[in-house]
Length: 275
Image (cartoon, rainbow, N blue to C red; front, side, top):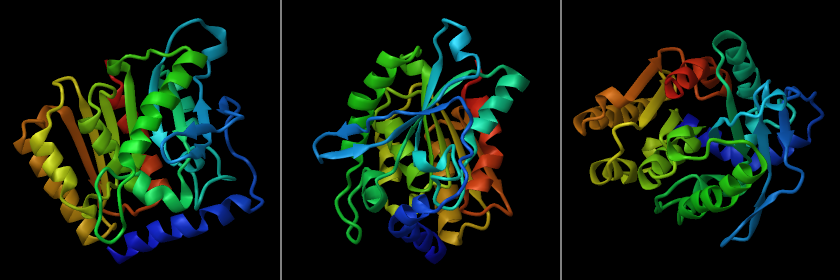
């Protein structure tokens, strides 16, 4: 647990400095950065948005499924990442060649010092008042309409997913249950279920549609509290009747780091976006 809290605090306090280091850009040519940050209403912030487009996007007139991901700085480009990138663009370019998977990914940059509270839907006695509702309203009412207006998307619920790790995994869980009319699938990597009882109570109170899908991953070396709460959530999801709607995975050597999430990304995407 101490390792995870240290990681979260380092992410908040050092992300600015990591982005200022002179590291080479590694984003693929089909990753675009929206020039003007989008305004985050209610709490008056702005947020950079990054877009991955399928390799064949400019050569077709077709519409594409969409995945919304948190911590956009860490998804595509080592130069903007905290301690390393997911390599989402490389993975999806490979899946396009290997499996024909075509997907638009929308990366939403984290709020640095605001990250923890933005990425939870539940207040915490120690960390403060949650801003997850405002963050999700930003995605649904600002980011998604912008993306649907400017890109060729399949905008309906059944074609829209959400994904993240750590606190990003927690807010992805929150979004699936609290905003179930907008997202039909979620990738929940190393979720911070230690944060409190909120997600467990949510699963008991709110129901997912039969078509909804959850991919849940945890590394075995992320700490007892992380792993124990992950297993507790899996047991609860099964008790609530979601056994056929979830895919779960624990890798014994997995750590709370981007390379381990990247290693599971292909499996998660293929399962979540399978027909």
